[in-house]
Image 1 (tube, rainbow, N blue to C red):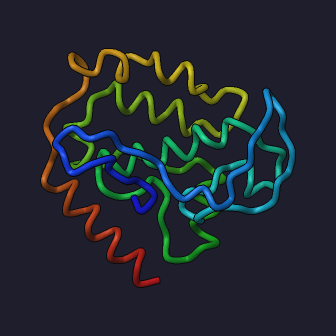
Image 2 (image 1 turned 90 degrees about the vertical axis):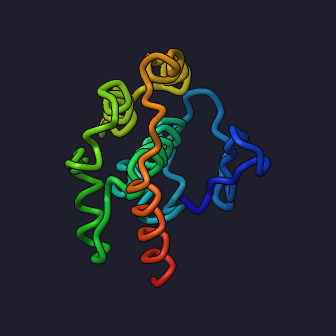
Length: 163
């Protein structure tokens, strides 16, 4: 995704999130309607319904990013923006074959927890950090990086840049 940067060119470099042009600092459990902000494919359920939103929207965005990093394309996509928004509102994504066949059940479970429609039921950042796939990644995460994922990501980025 376009908002991910590597800290260096070294193997195993830290990945950093960038471009917080619309960032808002939210205190505690504060929720309010802050307006539309962000990139359509990363829009969260709450903003499309014009519901108050807070910290759980960041988890949703991280779920979208994780999905893309694992298979090279986003969970919600349509050339027609109205259809894209309908997918997001419905939480309509899946894990199609063959791309998702080699992704561990733990990774899929984490994505499901991050892309939960109801923000009150969505996993928190603290919970995500202690999720099995994250804290025991050496034993439960696949180390195989599929070439198909890289190719899908290249195609997705090329298509996105054409818009």
